[in-house]
Length: 364
Ligand SMILES: [Zn+2]
Image 1: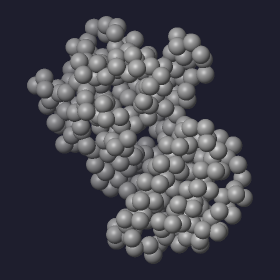
Image 2: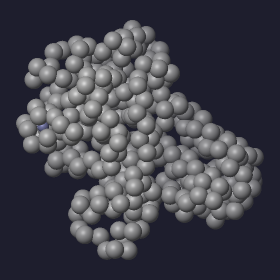
Image 3: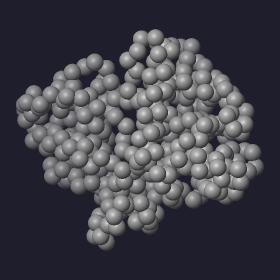
Image 4: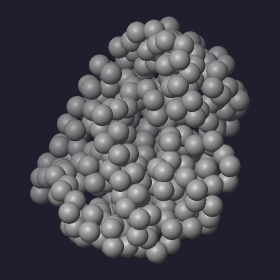
């Protein structure tokens, strides 16, 4: 199944195509903007543009290179997505494991190009960085450009364990080989390592217009949605197609329900939240826990928007609907972010949740 077409972002596309034509396109860019608005899809579009045999204002879409990119099968386009940390001990084996994990994700995306958020525990491990370095050191298979896309670049972890690999990565971004393009994407630029961020040219994408979302849903839904359902989805997307297309509704619904329950307990008071956290059934997978934390941050973000009188992406839990202190809500989001970082370590999720609940009860 080929990639669904890129919709919207017309001005950015025009600027990028113009930059490529005139030879002023930066070789290392960081695409930022809210989750689900098509940052990685734009990165793929850009890859297609530089690899296309007859590029114009857009990639032609018909040449061999364009079709290969559309099928995620171009030998000079390398798409790095977060994966689970390889288990092997040997660096060479780790690289093999990372390559296999990435190939498995790509095989999955060829079948279903609309994908959901990566597992909460997935990162760009050092093995992926080493793999990228290996690939960047080779010449292009087709003799033209080479494109490296690094999605969710905030998950490039600090590489204390291998300063050498980290430095090689930074050098690569500072002096990219001729005719190579690095496109990093993130919804969270503040959490991209500063040493990496400072070596990139920023490209900021905005939310899509409702008309673009509507057109996309009409063209890419398996069955034609009813007008009511379509409008509900357009409104739920709030300019971010990824929030309604390709997400695993059951999983994400579960995370949002758990987040809402926790927030209701927080609003009911400290005692309730501690009791609840202790009664909470253990999280069987860390990914489930981090998905709940992400849902919690999203819900608090919505509550902050609501408190300022703006439209929210999802309904805000009852107890938070009348909250009128956006600063407190933003502080709560920060606390969730800190817990999310701690969750990457070996701390017990129940314990983290009990502490977070107490902290939230204090600030909210
Ligand atoms: Zn083409």
